[in-house]
Length: 394
Image 1 (cartoon, rainbow, N blue to C red):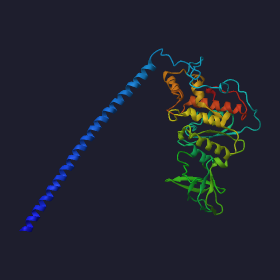
Image 2: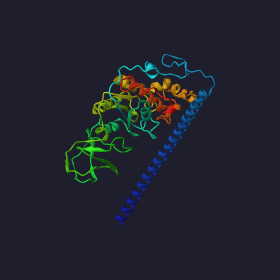
Image 3: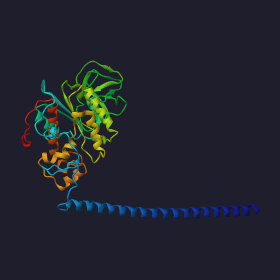
Image 4: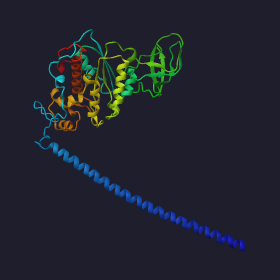
């Protein structure tokens, strides 16, 4: 009986202890939920106020744009509008003579008509083989122009296709008969390779140890098939994988490199782009080249510093097309600037009338870019001068 009594009281004590712990836990839960709900309500109020403020700011800005006769900012040496077209020119341009008027070459053209090889991303891609700047360049120069633009690629990816960033093959065996074999590709720094993700762009036909073939990408893996029957060959580790862009490179080619937009560089990381572009020129053994400056100010806040660094590095080979389009683009395209165009220029953005979306240019953009690259090539003595035709003639 005594044992039973003790057991009973012990059981009751346990039950009482558990109930107290449960009650305390429940109270903590209630307090935590109350605090959470209070914070959510407070955060919601803040979000609503921020939305109202943003909406009011946007409305005020639109009202400013829509007001008739609203004066533009007072002209300064940097923002003085051109009197002949009424545009706002937000940057000083010391190269006006390179953009307009008779071209006075600093070197005379000599030799055979060269090829022009354009390396880039979606800003170089041609959808119809007549409207992109390489197509315009072909019509103006009379040269063979090869377009190696592939969308969504950064400078490293472009350099892999061109040869400026070496790509190696891990040790393997290529059989005598043409058959699809898996291969493992890595950059010289053991980085990933991105061939064929968004287009060929000069990858095929490719070559491994002198054996020409085709690279394919299936389910995320790379495969190689030789073009014709030959001897069975054992490939050593770190043998260079050569794209068509590498093997087809010729002495005298002119390179046009328009790369870096997808890197979204700043004033520091632009050095990586410059280094890769230098390696591309070295790989092609090229001393005739044009480097196109970046235009996407919305994604590159330090775009002025980025383009200045490239200008300092490449000098007359550098075409600061953003500076040109901000100063002269609309007038040279024969477009009267809208209020939106003026607002874009104030922000340092390419005018909407020259763009197809937030980053890509339309037919006017590409026409102007093609013309200015052509003018710079004539100025540098790379190609002979021809009279530029009207837009509707090309």
